[in-house]
Length: 427
Image (cartoon, rainbow, N blue to C red; front, side):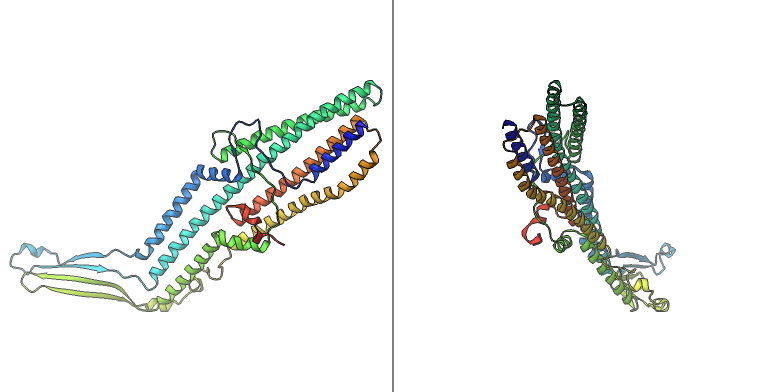
């Protein structure tokens, strides 16, 4: 009866591990170093990155260029004329002329300068965003490696403990002549495999902690805490709308379209005569009267009419017809990551649903096992099976969490939790 009761407990434990809907990973109680949540890790990584600081400074410089663009006109020209060698002759009529010439901008030139400055600003914003977003995604994935590395390392240690118990039990059964010697050989092989897997899992955990520490700018390894399984299924169309709101590539394409239209308008205005300069001058004569003078020049667009308007100029270099083509890559990335996320989520849910269905069958088996004697080595086999079930669940959940964080990076939001809020979750 005691063996039967043990088997019942093991089966119950296996079911609880198999069907558990979420994992909460506390910090390792034996860990004495820094511990970070995913948001803290991302924040520290941003603060420690010199490239992030450089790109942010570039964005700020481009913003100043946008502010100065409406006033980015040609400098006035100081003109001095009528200076000659006759100044050496006191009887000559000494003349001197000084003036200030302003070269006026062409029609549409200022608007084109402003549109170009805005496009360059949003180009810098895209570069900064892409780098920050990729860094945040890499940090989150490294943080997940620490979370599940700790869980898998703990599971591997428990498997070593069970394998050691199993070897001792089989050794006693061999002495009693109840099992063949080959069982001991298999148990020894299983123990060696368990120890190998435990050492590998521990090394992987140490490496993951070190990598997370490097990404966050820490002086040493960093542990992870605060993980909980994502719950919910984001709506695909809502994710696309979120991306349009958060990713600067969409605004960059709009600015590129505006520049193309501005260039086309400026090209059309080149067919109209325009003032090329305005000059105010003052004339001095030693033997005559002084006078002021106002002059201006008009550019005649004769050759502009002769050469016509090529299609690539009329269309702003083709940018109007290619407008928003750059956002197709963003939409494609979201679609690809959403597919991977959905597949991983489906696999994880299938394991959970299967565990629920298997629960009833196992409870029936438990009722049938009452009153029957279950050998201790069989009990250990059941415990090993329970660990295998837990490992399958952890691997499926890790793939699910990785897919979720990659999808978060594709959408481009800072807080991945908003993907699972009410308005973003599919019914």
